[in-house]
Length: 427
Image (cartoon, rainbow, N blue to C red):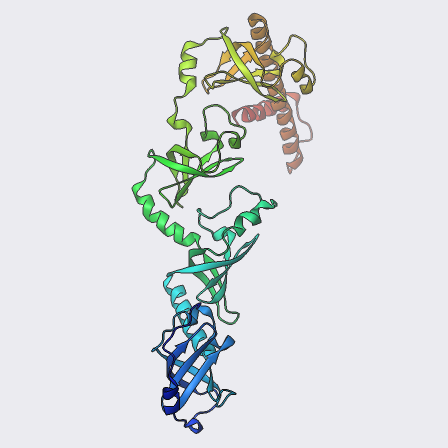
């Protein structure tokens, strides 16, 4: 309490007081009326006794003191019958503690929302004060509005981002109490979840929402909409082209529009930006056939080839075998043929129904022949793999058979092997 409340007793009032302190005893609980109140002390008029004073740590705490008013009847515990000022020394500590913990217990039982003032932060969460008692708000139980999404656990910026909330008050619920140690465990998420559950009733899959980016991570973008609701746009739903790093195109605070594509049982919301955009593959696949030219920019080089994107965000792969007539036996040599950021004219080798586009830098007829040879070799390799697996499986079955025939014909062994191969092919 920063300002002294007036209405001080006059000297005449004090002289009129009389004392009968012999009726009091140490630790006795007394009632009186507040006649003076300041940040560091309170004067109490105890009827038929005289003046009592509560000061220092015996005021209990600011939370309790802030509720007191001049003229209010209060209870206190007697500490000393006659102090150096001639007053009865009193304490609010036991009384205040009991009253505040009674309120805390009620708030805990009824799951009432209370205010938690942030005193400090560490990597695990926030140290807070609730009704004058110490509490801890774990980072995992923060609301989406305050959760830190742009820093990893080992990132030094994590703590600095949390420190900015020191001095603020969050709406929380008490989820655990320990009166012996006077500590509380709190959850802000339970409050936001309650609000979110209510708001989610008006949304359904297919709705389009306007939101703000509140976090950009490797696997997608978090956006907040309708004040308390938050959803994830997975990296695969950011654009029709393959997105490697969402941070390149999106930043915190950016406004976006997205479509709700899923709401799970826990009301977690999945959104999509790309489903609000025209799929460039549809028009491209209708107008394109193998052998057509494809002008695109090399966006990424991988061990198996180069990823190429055209001006309409249609993406294709030029396999390492289709980059040059010379066989590239080492992926590092790909950059000798094409470079990231380079725009080249490729030839469409094939378009697959699952929206996969394969390109080539070779003459078209030669590229097709090479592709057919690679496909045939792949089939041969797969057949050999299945046969080898079948032989191994048959060998294992023979070893585990309790009674092995003394002599097994070649025909029987071949038949058994065929059966295992059939089984492997089906799988």
